[in-house]
Length: 101
Length: 101
DNA sequence: GCCAGATGTCAGCGATCGACGACATTGTAT
DNA sequence: ATACAATGTCGTCGATCGCTGACATCTGGC
Image 1 (tube, protein in one colour):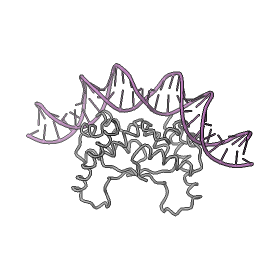
Image 2: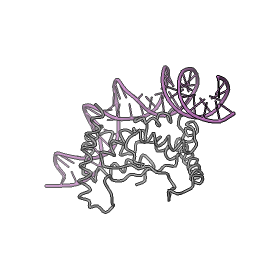
Image 3: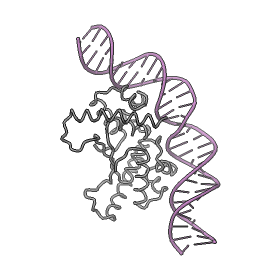
Image 4: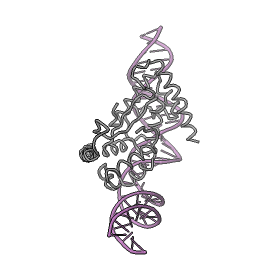
């Protein structure tokens, strides 16, 4: 599953938790956070901390992988790869700035 | 690249940034965060926020994918899958508690 | 060696976090 | 319909965030 937004993460955590038959309280205990934190992260809270997030997804048996976007094959030339990444930066930042207004 | 800790993320961000020939200031401007935040996230700051993290990796053209751990094949039975996830939960939480003391 | 640029660190500020406890609301099994 | 479990929301508190601006230190090209 591709993760782009905090809401994506929240949905993933809730889905995984329910699939494992855990309630929020149990997951909170296993991770070592408050139940309220689980509630908030499942709602896609953007200012929740990375450390607790990683612990939570780890506790749910989820692996996070990062890779360059736009890589269909690992054999793309570095030049075209660099150009693609540069284009993505500008459009993504513009999109992020629109969200702030 | 497998992401397990905030330090993994920090290293990834720094690596990607330098490979794109960006300095911290430029990246900060593109993402819409302070340069200090870039400095801290690259050092693996665990309490940095998810929202800003996702924006930053997006700006660097990095895609995050989440998947169930231990899945070599998508055809594993749900029972054995559940048992594996349970074992992971306990050891991961114990490890997290050790870090807190 | 010199120096400009890049990175690292610090202090102060208003905003928010995450934990805790409590209460409200929803969901589910009988 | 009822009871109980699960989830959602609220208020409070000490801790920390992320920003700004400034200064310190490091790096690399000349």
